[in-house]
View (cartoon, rainbow, N blue to C red):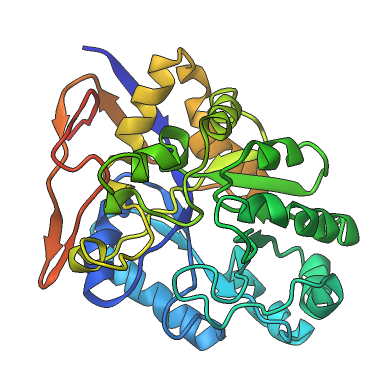
Length: 338
């Protein structure tokens, strides 16, 4: 039987939510991933050391059956002091910047992306070596929002050359091209953006479980993302942006944005890299690149995948929460052993 070994898989962009949803989705990541970079956009957002440590404890409790390291982040604010960031530095792996109102629970995000407005916090982060993760979209036409954000990435990267800047969940060929323009610019890419285009979301009957932000783009964008990921590009890493929402908030008018991929990410990635004859680059994409970029060494956690059919559950549930995964009810070619 064909098999493939993944060593210390890292998900460098993950939504774990809170409460019963955390208890449901947390173990679906901790079972197979060694660590994950956890998003701070709760309600209210994580902006204090006390809230950060309390949230980490809730995650560890939800995932207590597994060896799992949640790497914590703060929600970006313009007025974080150097002293505060120095005090919290050892508790976080990065700070996440959201433009105001651009995605789920980002209403209190940054209203102005002017570098001078952001400078107080960014200068402190640069001096302390704290990476900056950015949800890079404007409020323009939905298909152009990421492309329109490229000059902002350039402005931040050039103004703060010692600051590591991560373009989160990139979706366009423009972003892939931007990767090689600045030494301090990096990126994550999701599973779903490697697989789908807008046509899969809305080309026929609307599929709410593929609706996400940033929205899926054009075939040429998907091709550029896939080429970079399959090549093992050293500045690109896996970040699922797995974003669970209750089933009733997806299958409704005005559905929430987010694709839930945590339970099937590794199985689908192995199939994708095998299909393209690039399995030798998969460990770089899901672990080694992130280790180098973040200067982080995870605990060893080997996951064996085998070439055996896996039927994706129609939904996952806990108490009153129900979540529908990507490929619900469908057959995958690879399974996780055990």
